[in-house]
Image 1 (tube, helix red, strand yellow):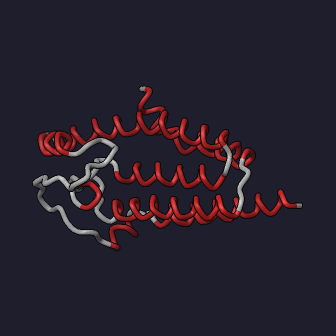
Image 2 (cartoon, rainbow, N blue to C red):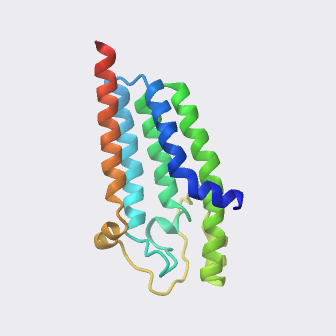
Length: 184
């Protein structure tokens, strides 16, 4: 198993024990939870927009947020991580979150790049020359694509992106519980 395959396979499984450590170290306050919720909502919005354009293994997504960055789902996830770090109100938690994201997702993004190139060939190469890997462009790229479409709420649901929103809301609730328990 390659290093990239290891990180792709284990990113979620290793995230659970790290989440427990992050929660243990968290020192949330009502203000930090609210600020983290606002930041996280931005990340969820980006992820939702991306999921509504993504038809996995069918069409190379180049419209919507994909015209700004090749990885809008991961950009949205990064903003969610920032929101969680702010809500946790703990430097140690933030370091764990950012370290985890940087290590795991740098490998995952590169692995997915290779898969997209294998699947879409020259179309992906043209797209990759125009649109940055992670940090977004200021203006949308004009990339020609067959079957590229607009946002679809049905596609959002098919990609089960609503699970990210549910998970984030539950995490915020856990932060509220942690805050309340620390008051006792």
